[in-house]
Length: 252
Image (cartoon, rainbow, N blue to C red; front, top):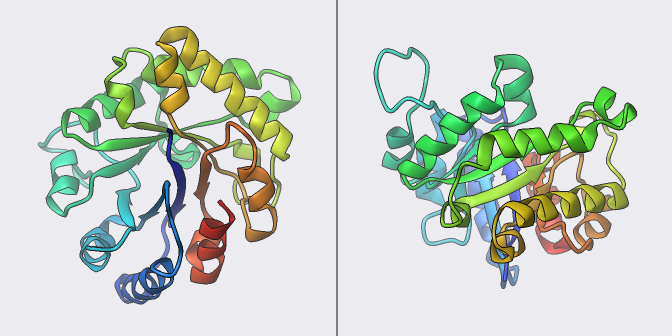
């Protein structure tokens, strides 16, 4: 049975003190919620990973890094390695977010290398993919998503996929207030699940969690999360407020 997941991507938000306060309040609220098969993940900035990891110890909140270098170590100024992430007791990393692709030139090829390094270092990967508005309007969105997944992930073994979480984020719906309809989200998630099923045994496609990311809020979360192939959300803005984030956890 695949997990339900609510993951909060904080992006470049929250100072050390804000992280400390937020996590303290969140852990208190999460303890009141019956999680069952639901995972709760937060992804602070690199400077706050260690604090978040320590503050969530013993609580059902996991911590993820927002990015990672494909290289193991060396002269790569400003980069963070997989071993550095592991060393602060963080076991999950987000890779391929649309903002990394757009602003920092990440490609399917470079992301395949990052995925390899992450898995080699026993990091679970939340792999992001999705189309821009132009692709959606030209009805090229399925082709774009297929290429992103095939080129970055289809070299992996079936066992590797036990450590992969997929996150569909239509770029036109990130931070814009626009949201793909629940039907559009379900359509893409079903397409992706079938794509994985064609490449691997059915167990892989049925067990991989596929999250939706794109302006999910307490007001629309329940309807989106109710769709058969939507296993949760990769949340941006609504993950920065404890009340909103807890509402999303309850919605799933």
